Amino acid sequence: MKSNPSTLVKLLLIGCLSVVCVAEDFDFFYFVQQWPGSYCDTKTSCCYPTTGKPAADFGIHGLWPNYNDGSYPSNCDPSNPFDQSEISDLRSSMQKEWPTLACPSSSGIAFWTHEWEKHGTCSESVIDQHGYFEAALNLKKKINLLQALESAGIQPNGDSYTLQNITGAVKDATGFTPFIECNVDESGNSQLYQVYLCVDTSGSDLIECPVFPHGQCGAQTEFPTF
Image (cartoon, rainbow, N blue to C red; front, side, top):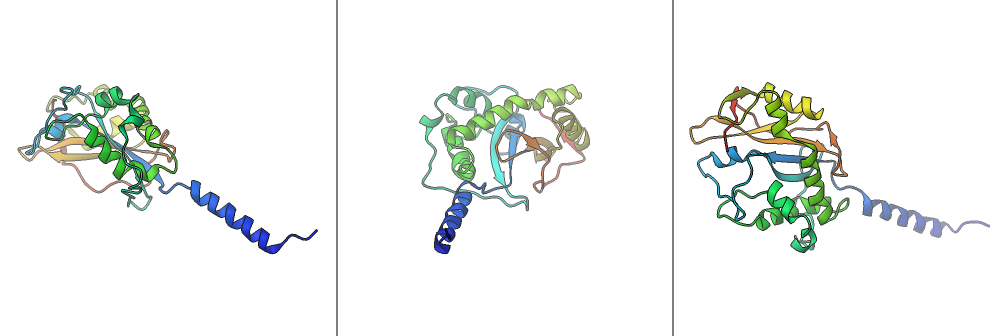
């Protein structure tokens, strides 16, 4: 029996639409952690969250979908706003591992709302809202940046270190090359601010970064106390 050409076309179209619906709309994630001492040691300073001063450890800044050409999607689905009831079981972990340092002091809801609505919605073809925040928390458990740096003799005591040594310490511990972002303290000195590692589109496995953000650190970079 001959197939009806129009039926074949319809089936092909349905197949293509199905692929489009589940295709990733990005190429990889940046998983970004920030050092609270460097966030606070600037001209704008910081405010501790309402839960109190965070631990002296790297905190999550975000899990950001990115493209291989260095650009990134943002605010992808206004119809899917942050819903704190979706992450109620994660909230205590998020307060500890993903604290807000912005002023005025707050609970973290505004910070997490921003991260989900600007970045998380652009990965919703792969992971839902709960899965997005859970993926970031799981990555934080895998990647102990402070331990990696301290094991290499790089201490958060205000001393300065070379970018090569900082990068090497993180690579030795994780197996992957990080991007190090610096900011400047009140005196204009370069200081270790954020560490970027790249993650596959599932949000679970580290990969080598296809591209790094723009920016540079000074020849000597401070690692301030917190």
